[in-house]
Amino acid sequence: MKKIILGAIVAAYLVAAVPVSAQSEVNSSQSASAFLVELSWGNVRAQYGKVWSKLHPRYQRVTTRAFWEACQRKKDKAAAGIDVHAIRAIDEYPDTVTLPVLGSVKVRAVTLEMRYSHPLLGINKKMVDTVYALKWGSTWKGLWEPETYTAYAKWRCPA
Image (tube, rainbow, N blue to C red; front, side, top):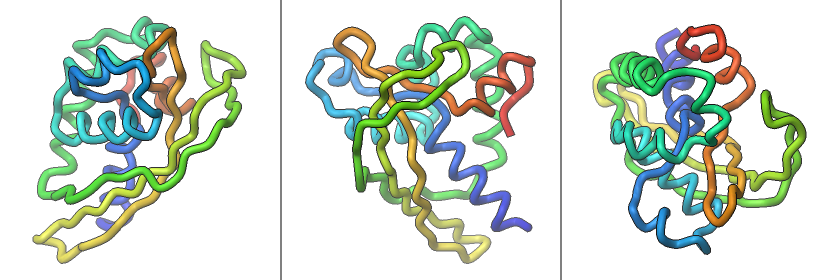
C-alpha cells in the first residue's frame, strides 16, 4: 500500500504545474522537454511562485493561487522523505489532446523519467510518465490533467 501511494505522490510531481528558471522566460526557443523538466524540478523544490506563473492562464482562473499552493504543500507533506535524484526527458512528440476549458489542442507530449528514493522505506526506483505543454505566444505553458482540473474546479485538492 505504501508503495502505491508513494508512486502516486511521485507522479504528482511530474504533472503538478510548471517550470522555474528566469531563462525559460527569456529563451523563447526553449524546447518543451526542457520546459517540462524545469516544471518538474520546480514542483519538487516547492518553488510555487515561479511554478504558478507558468500555468496556462485559463487554468489560473479556475482556483486561487493561495488554494493551489495549499494543495501543493499538502502533497509535499505527504511526500516527505522522498529524494528525487534526476529528472530527464526521454521522448518528445507532437500530439493533440482534449482538455477542460481548452478543448482539443495541439501540444507537445514529453515523456519524463524521474529517479527517486525513500531511504526509510528502502525504495530506489524510477517512474516514467508523459506530460504535456502548450505553446502560448512565444512561451510554453503548463497544463493540468483533466482529473486535476476537475478537482480544482470543485475546490478540492487533486488526489
